[in-house]
Image (cartoon, rainbow over all chains, first blue to last red):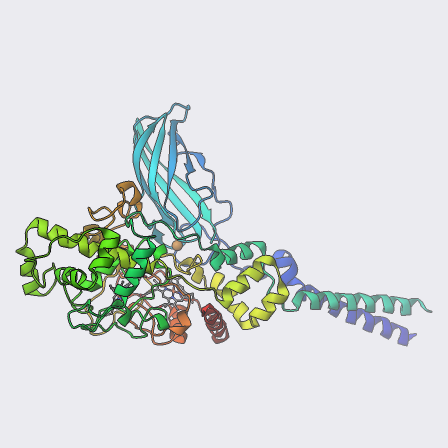
Length: 176
Length: 408
Ligand SMILES: [Cu+2]
């Protein structure tokens, strides 16, 4: 009788140990999803854009809006871009066409547009100085001189002055 | 009575299956790459090198006759003030077209390290600071540098007329009449040659410049043919793209694979050493020390204004390009903090075979280069783009092993 109980207890203990070992060893396969939050705290996570200094090798933040057609920051204009180089890849000089219209959908003529940008996680700007070189009509503008020299999260910002002034930041995540 | 025994067997079986699954999950499979990693690897392989880009600024760029003649000029020591220096004196073919010295030795000593040449046809900018924007314009620099070839453009024009008249005229048409042309004249450091140049008529200068430019264009036509050769790494990339584990295992040791994984991952070397040439041909401050005994070097911050002012740049009268074809120059980033002590990353192909390293040979060995990246010192000026990697000594060994797979 007591021998039976010992056998059961020993078997249970061995199996439990095996299951725990199994849980630990299989972690690389199923990832950190069953970890206790306390344990998960030391896992690298994407950080808010403000803390840009120490994330040279971090992934782009989750939920980054990479849409190519958006309202400007103060919703004055609706802006979209299309690239001559599609998909955009690194180390190639290329141009974009930027389309600017009012929030109501009227093309914005002869706006004054400045271009800026960079990599927020790397702390550097664009490697070139792109410029709007031509107004193409119907709210379309030619942006020349774009080249991205590395993969990762890039911001391209436009500062638009027409009947009103507003800014917009497009996000690109490039491979390579 | 038999109940506990059955339970025991079931539990034991469960345990064994669990252990087997764990062993399977943990068994090292270094050659397993995710689809995203495979795509990244593919961008680094030589198979991804696009065809030679056109050089619209040089109408002789793809002229085989010009290339054959340019090769002769590249190795002809008569193109120097002392008859002893050719391009090939510093750019030795058997050493990957560099010289293995911290600083180049011509007529005098250069202020920077000799760069390898293979694949530079793909680079929009030439030199460590990119102060030239084409191979032909670049070639004209050393010819008139006091510490390299040390002579001047009228001497070279005379030399062409006496030593290479037929070959020159077969490619570029008749040479102008050179009678009365000073023996040594050009916008160089040497005061008498400079004075002689300033004493020449604009038309005379123009005629000499045209010959000088054609020398550069022929040398460039030759340099375009110098391309990187396939390495063990490229064979590995082919196998990785094809998912051929057996071939991958044959080609790379576990350390080399781990080093490659660090290169494209945790160490993120690929930020700047990207594409099949393993350089982005842009400019970065990587906190390399100011070489002792040399004047302060501002890197790209000095090179950008120079290329804009260069009499032989893409927008100059000597360029065969239209201004639309000079996008790099027209949209150049010419000022700003990020250019201070920013230098062009050399291609890492063949890098293990050509110490010392960096723009003035500041770092003697590849091991020390990796320690530099691991600790990321602060930049002597400007702002470093690096951040400490904190890799273990074993991981640094792996990176080193990987870099050695880039040998031809
Ligand atoms: Cu970056």
